[in-house]
Image (tube, rainbow, N blue to C red):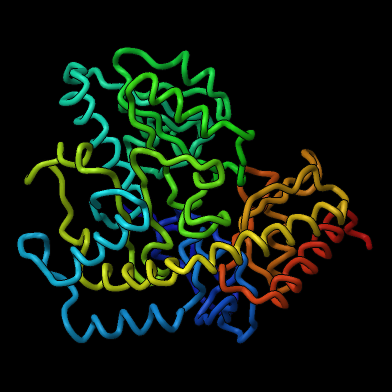
Length: 410
C-alpha cells in the first residue's frame, strides 16, 4: 500500500503534493518576470537577486534572447545529432572564439558538462600521458560543488548531497581550496587533471587567495596535467570578467560552462578546449540527444553576442565593487563577513545567531529574493542588467533585513 505525503500548501493557494521534495524553496510562488523583477501569485513584486543561481545573468525574458528563441521556434527545434543543423557550428565557432579555444562539446546541464569534462580528462590522460586504463586521478577541492550526479557527489564533502547514495566513484583526490602546495603534493603519475571552481559558489562565494589560480596553472604545466575551470556559475560576466579565471590572467586548458549560456530560457552547457584535447572523444563515445539542439544554440549564439562587446562584464565589475564597498562599510550587526567579486557576493552571519534561511526569508518579506547556502550564508547574484537604482534598492533592503534579524525586537 502506498502512503501519500501530506500536501504542502504554498502562498497563494498552490499545493505541491506531487512534486519530489528534493528542494526546500522559500515560500514564494512566482508567475511572471521581466528584467530584474518577478511577480508572485498574489501580484506582489520582488527584486530577483538570485538570478536562478546565475542562469539569468541577462535578466528575465531578455528581449534579444526571447526574440532569438521565437525566431528559432518557427524554424526547427530538434534534430538529434544523427543529422546536422544550420545553427550548431555557428554557435560552437562563436563560443570557441569567446574562450580563445578551438572547439566545443555542447551538452545541456552543468552537471552533464562536468561529467563530460571528467570523461574527456580521463581519456586524454590515457591516450596522451599513457596513464593505465582505470588508474586516472583528478585533483579536486574541499567544499566544491560541481553538480549532484553519482560521479560528482563521489568527490563532494557535502553530506546532504553525498550520504546514502553510495557506492561512490573512485579516482579523485581532494585538497583544501586555495592551497596550491597541497595540489602539487597530491599530483602523482596517475593525475590527469585539476578541476577547480575559480570562485566556489555553492560554498558561499568563496574567493581564493591572490595568486592561487596562477599557482595552479604553474603546477599543471609542470606536471603536464589539464587545468579544468568550472565556470558554470562564475563565468559569462558574473564575476566582472567574461570568466572568473581572467582576474588572474589564467587560461585553463578546459572551460566548463552552463547556466547563463542558455539565457535563462533553455538548458545549454559546454566543454570548450583545443583540438589536441577534444579530439580524443570520437563518434559514439559520448553524446546527448538534446545536446547542441537548434533552439538552445540559437539562444546561446545571442548570449555570446551580448557578451562580445564587454560592457556587461565591465558593468558587473563596477556595480559589484560598489555593492561590496557599501555592504562592508555598513558594518551590519551579526554579519561576520561580506565577500565576493563582480555582481556576485555573499553575506555570512555570525555562527549561533540568526541563520541564512532566516535572513533569506526576511529579505523575501521585504521584496527581495536571494537564497541561503550552508547554514549561515546568503548569496546574491542580481542580473548583470540590473539598474543602478534597483541595485541601490536591493542594498538598502539587505541592510534593513540584516539589522531586523539581528535585533528582532526593533
